[in-house]
Image 1 (cartoon, protein in one colour):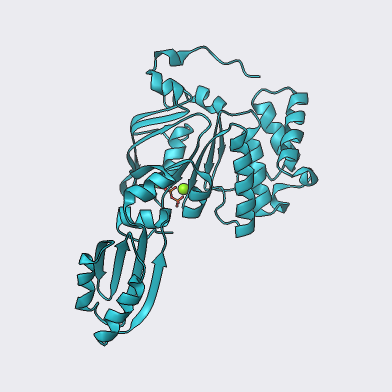
Image 2 (cartoon, rainbow, N blue to C red):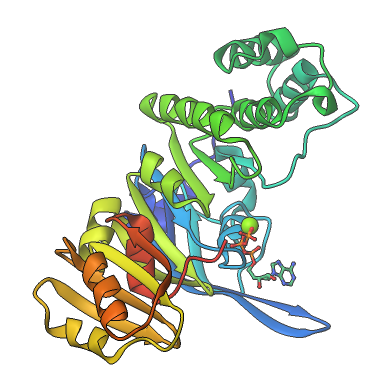
Length: 332
Ligand SMILES: Nc1ncnc2c1ncn2[C@@H]1O[C@H](COP(=O)(O)OP(=O)(O)OP(=O)(O)O)[C@@H](O)[C@H]1O
Ligand SMILES: [Mg+2]
């Protein structure tokens, strides 16, 4: 389909050639009227072909900026990134031919119908008129959009529009698919349906890099994740690695109607407890063995004459790992 130019990548180190995505000490500082914003501060990633990889982080963590650099839309301030062996700064055209990108907002062309959105993208990537139409039809079928063929994007539901954007990103058979918060703003059922679509894509061999601020999304889809915040990787690995390395299996948070009773601090010596954090009227207990612990926290309160106003118990999850890593709530 595309004539792929030989082999500027032979001069690159071997691991960069093999990796689908690799970054080394990647930085981006935006310079604006309000001063400098260090959005990405030294990110190292290495993603294999065929892998489903998640960049997980709260609002403003630097996810879109990282994806922007990997897709040659944002120029790195320093460091290095390669996609399919090509340096994103030196060979942006080679990179763009090999990637598909679904950005955070809806970027479909409302002047064109659904089918034409795909067909025109195919033509843009050099497919013949016939091949572009064939590919558009094939993708619409694959993504269950055939009955929306003539519809304009603005007439589609959020989930349909997102599926169409994914189709459009796949028209030219990209080696790596970048998805920036693909399920943000979708209702839970639509989100789960989209997860199925993405799983199917990956089982067909598609390399996918997805950003999300939904823990359960990363947990449901990704083989490996990097948790990022303030432009840095806090931890990376398989979801299980992260849960294990974070140490805390269960996080119990209790709010009292007055200062946290002194007796709570003694829980530090209780078997299975790894950490006790007291902030004002709230205590957070991290524990490997949490049986009965919530009851004890309530009992300590009552014997000190202090009531419990709120209590929650977070079972082992990526979310409890994040809490353990960062020491604070995951910001939405
Ligand atoms: N074009 C820009 N100019 C200046 N600052 C920017 C620009 N784009 C992003 N930023 C800032 O860089 C930081 C990282 O933003 P980025 O959009 O990469 O985060 P994000 O993780 O994608 O967040 P979200 O979950 O909200 O999409 C934020 O502080 C943001 O305000
Ligand atoms: Mg973003």
